[in-house]
Length: 180
Ligand SMILES: [Zn+2]
Image 1 (tube, rainbow, N blue to C red):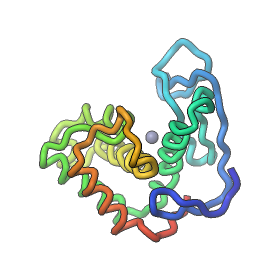
Image 2: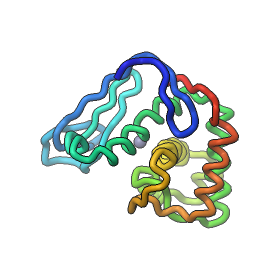
Image 3: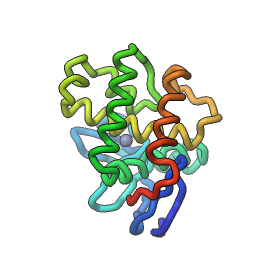
C-alpha cells in the first residue's frame, strides 16, 4: 500500500507506506501469529505497528467485502496509536456510558470477545483489559462505519448505541486528518 491520504469512516488518514501481506490459514497461538499451522485460534488478520505491516488471511482475497471491513479494522489500529490521550479517553467514556446502561453486543468479534471477559472493576479502574477492549472496539466501530448499511452477524450492538458511536465519530474525528 502506498503512502498518502485515504478516507476511513469520515476521517482522513495519512502516513508513510504500509505493507499488506496475505498468508494462508492464519492462527494466533501464545501471542504469535502462525501460518498453515494446526495450533492456535484462527484469525482474519494481525497488525504489527512498528514494522508497519498488516498480515491478512489469504482466504479474504475471495471475499472482497469482508476484506474491506477487516482492512479498515487493521488500519484503525495504526490510527488509534496516534489519536492522542484526550481522544482515546473520550472514546473510553462512550464505552463506559454504554456499560453503565447495560449495553450488550458489539460491532465485531474482536471487541465482543474482549467485552465478554470484562468485569465492572475493569471499566471503573481502567485496567489493561479495559484499554485493550477500547482499542478493539474503536477499530471494529470504524470498520462498521465503513460498511454500515450491510448486515453482518458480528454487528450485535443495539441501534441506539450505534447512533451514539456514530455521533461521537462525527464530532471528534469527522473532517480531521489522523496520522497512521
Ligand atoms: Zn484488532
